[in-house]
Amino acid sequence: MLHKDRFASGSCGKSIRTEQCWMTPIKFVTEGSALEDPSWKKDIQCDGKPLSVLIEVQREREQRSKLLHIHSLLCKCKLCSSTVKDRVSFPLHPQEYGGTHLPITLVKQMLQL
Image (cartoon, rainbow, N blue to C red; front, top):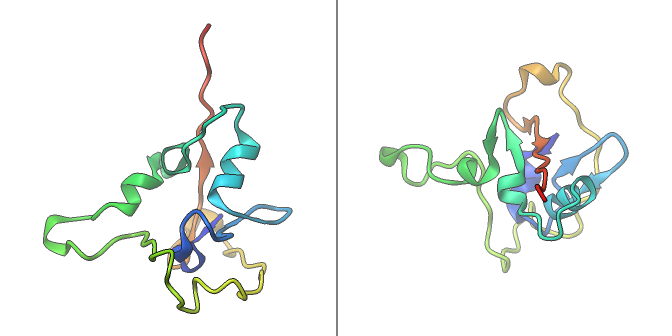
């Protein structure tokens, strides 16, 4: 489950909650993929769309409105702080997500020889 409020730090922050622990997007993809150079922005999907699409602008008229927003690496806001404690938080009904949780899947790519 990807937590949108923890995603502000992008690949650096632990924003993905598995049953066992919190993970960064990079660690999530690396542990679930045999690829040497996985790309978390395309290999992690929500409702069949890669995160790269969800990070992009949703509509032309709402150019500043994004579903997922990554802050600058120099950001010092509360969400990007390394002191944010890991908290276990799952929606009651994951199939009816909204607000702060996004169900995600890892796209496993098969290498053809």
